[in-house]
Amino acid sequence: MSSLTSQTAASPVKQKLPRHVAIIMDGNGRWAKRRLMPRIAGHRAGVEAVRGIVKACARKGIEVLTLFAFSSENWRRPREEVGLLMDLLLSALEREAQKLHENDVCLRFIGDRSAFSAKLSEKMAEAEVLTAANTGLKLVIAVNYGGRWDITQAARRLARQVATGELAAEAIDEALLQGQLSLADLPEPDLFIRTGGEQRVSNFLLWQLAYTELYFTDTLWPDFNDQSFEAALASFAGRQRRFGRTGDQVEQMQGA
Image 1 (cartoon, one colour):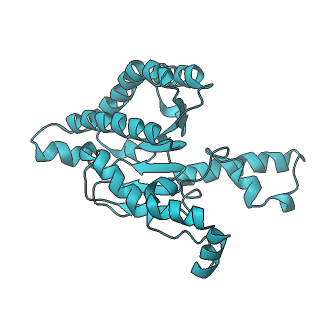
Image 2: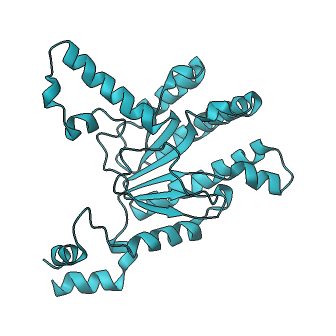
């Protein structure tokens, strides 16, 4: 007991690293606007920030990193910008998939792929197959994703099982529904980060964020660097995660 306590006190961030970090990468457009540049320049700069956070998570031994790259609501943006974002995603895949594979990163995409071009969908599938056996960081990219969509498609899968007689409606519980969600096989996020100054979850991982620690920063995504990430991790390390228990109960559990 004393040994565990002293180790925790000596390096709180190391002892309390999140297993799973989820990030809304907000602020690319504003970053570009402040520099009198087109919005796509901000998105390109955002890709560089993605490289940095992937390296940081891999270096620290964080198990899962989920990035919200394109929401189901982002189709409402100007058509030209959406087209450029799709081109940027495709070029990033063509450029980065092999590098991720060489660094033992397992890449996965979640979201509704039906709206994407055949070429983009093919490249996404190829990257997943290429990296599927890797045992390092699990990098999840949410594209054309929405938390409500995720829950809805899970409910539809269970409804089909009920309709065919495979499942009784009365047997459906939280565990069964969760098992049909996009990240069913991964730990739920411990730490959620949103850059850019907004303080909302914007239909991202609505089920999975139920007990996640939320961290908001004014830093625009292209400026989010190692120091920014360390600040988020330090905030996480200083929090007591209760999951419905009292603070005294948590302390007793940690001291056991």
